[in-house]
Length: 378
Image 1: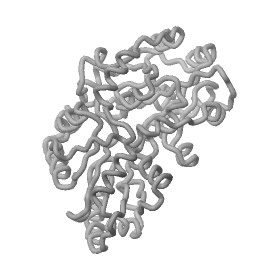
Image 2: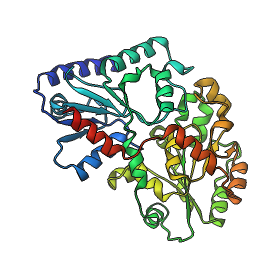
Image 3: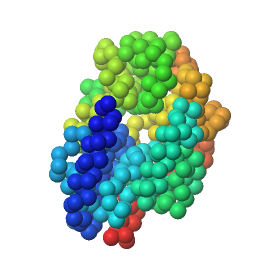
Image 4: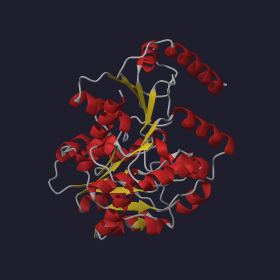
């Protein structure tokens, strides 16, 4: 029922927006990615800093049934509508530019094991109708995304992703330590753990472990021993979970001196995106999240957690396999294996990281490239 009412709301608001005269050069960014590597938000931030003459409005969260009429007026006025997820526009004459929100390792759309043909065909129709331009970083990216969604090749533009530009930022490492861990440590090595959305495993036991504070969902998880080992090596671990999992996780983990959760509130309150913080980190821990492709820009160690690999491949599937041959870093399936690795951190994957970077990240200065493309199309 809620879905039907929301569709009705969107339909009515689109009719309203169509009545609004279009403004030449006006841009609206519909941000559905929050502050967790949002191409939309970071392109907006770039425009405000470097091209203040551009009329651009950021609308978030998107989609939402709580937007004011003024937001829909901005949507109706826009010549360019930029999205982070599905393409959207209310008039044929508008230009829809889709940044999407990550280079896919996980199967999705037509390629996924857990989607329906009906839904995939609907999404294909939406993309064919609304996607005028789709940002791309490489031939590999285009092949993966088209396999999943069915985008035609002539819609891609090799302008890259704005969030990659912000990996060149110089966020103060000591400020991050002070803000999240309340310490000053010149020897600090900061890691960040960013897993994929594990709710789709449809395994209640996994959610129960996360709720109890076991953010890795390791069978041998022990918070005290993990924290002690991190302390020994001046290592600090930032935990950035999916918002759904953050709402579940136990607060008792906050008692650990060298482990801290990164909340969306911290990012919003400081007016920053997650990608502006990543340059202050020394290594990444993830599982099947596409963030590892972007992290290749930093050429720093990446550790891959595989305790649910078989289950994930069965439930949803991966686009690139075998997993251990694809990922440019060591794999661990337990806390013991992770601690052994952190105790003897010998980075031998530089060559593999560079290989994959050349395959998937072939663009530079994405923000400026996107701005110049829009200027040419005005």
